[in-house]
Length: 458
Ligand code: BGC
Image (tube, rainbow, N blue to C red):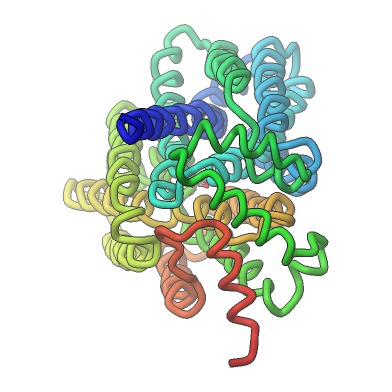
């Protein structure tokens, strides 16, 4: 009887933790939607506000700038106020940004609104994975944290569809404003989720931590997990200098390295400029190019679902290595296809297949695994600060790629632009082989202790 009751509680708690993760992952939906929506909206904003090319660039890149600022300056917030509290503030900021951009009377207010949305994305981009990783049981942590990435990819497709559906009525205000709906659902949902038990322990609120663990773990696991978190916390100092110490420097390098590689292998040239790439390859009609783009977005979603199933079984490292290899090959072929001077049907088809294959390989590797790993590899006391550094490196690199892609096409030509991203992929592969550890199935505390063990002389 007693064991049946314990079993019931365990099952109920598993469901609860999955729902909590799914609610928090709505932040990812906003990340994807709000970064994707601009590509369609800017066409109409440009006409309504008579934007110069420079003003267009400002409106488009304002969000990425906001993301960079948000990620870089918020590192201590989630440590100070708690993970859930920060996410609640961020949800309010998302609503404010959506309303502000939808109602903006002119270019300046629109740009400010987009920066506000960007700040919200920048903070949410790492706080959501951080929160989910701290509430998840180790054996499904890869899957639950990567729900956030799945939501990012769904958000991107929703933004393409909203742009497409609202284009006839020139509804750019609706395109921006619609984001208020998932933001309001996120806010509402967050009111019902618990604070991270690890944050409670960090604040020395042990009883509260125990209460939360009792809701999200098997009854038999609560005491042991609490003891593990307490023990690991005693070994940490929790200041900046620790992040630069010989034992944790590798973790810092891995976070920043994966951040830069995730972007410098060129994913957002496809996410932001796919119709342009397809047009260069000969898909002349706008609607064919947009349709192909939606197709690529759907491949991104579906392969992320596959990744969710594989992460906790196959492990992070093999997925990274196979995925990167696939990205390198598809970029190589895409570049080679562009060697032919005139666009043909064959080139158009090859480009669509290569781009789809490239996105599929990203979706099972660097896409989810960068955000997952930075939520796993840092010790509790400095987790939020360290993640903010890695996230800022990611947004800074994203901005750089977005600003340079079109110029690179002009300066290097099409083949070498894609080969350059492939070359970065090769460096990323070597980086993963040499430096990135496997974290599958380990508790966050076990991962922390490996850094200390590694730095001790044998
Ligand atoms: C990246 C984004 C990218 C998205 C595409 C995320 O992991 O950080 O820059 O647009 O994946 O799915």
